Length: 101
Length: 101
Image 1 (cartoon, one colour):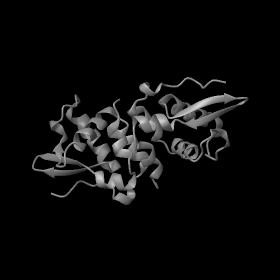
Image 2 (cartoon, each protein chain N blue to C red; image 1 turned 135 degrees about the horizontal axis):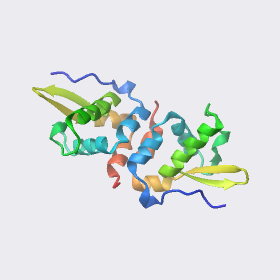
Image 3 (spheres, each protein chain N blue to C red; image 1 turned 180 degrees about the horizontal axis):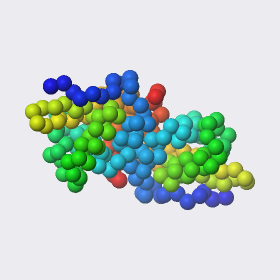
């Protein structure tokens, strides 16, 4: 199936991306996705939040342009839009992922 | 005079920094500071906000560990804590500054 609606690369804004990343749960999701090249269903991650909260966080990341979400059967597979983010804000993602706290 | 209270490098947290940067006015302040090695009084910047709003934004940046603020006479001189941010989150600041939108 095709990906859920998301901003084109040219529509992604830095303040929206920073806001999306500025949450501990969403940062955990981004860290988990950054460790894999294939996508994952975020419901399989141990994030300590309920399903509706998780849905909210993934939508925030998708609408900001940080992740792409594609329905696959009953799951939704998320992947990090690393190429887009690295092209627009070179270094940003690496800097965020380097954070120890 | 000595700098206003601020977190030590080891106390700076990524989510607080991202939150501090995720605002258009604060991003303008950071961009302006990044263009200079010496500090500036943020009141001299053309930001389109009132004095109390500006004070709030500068305090948010200071408390997050993004800027250092030092009183000088009746002014407060802000400087970007680039060395601390680059050490903790290498690439983050450059990525943010590279953003066109």
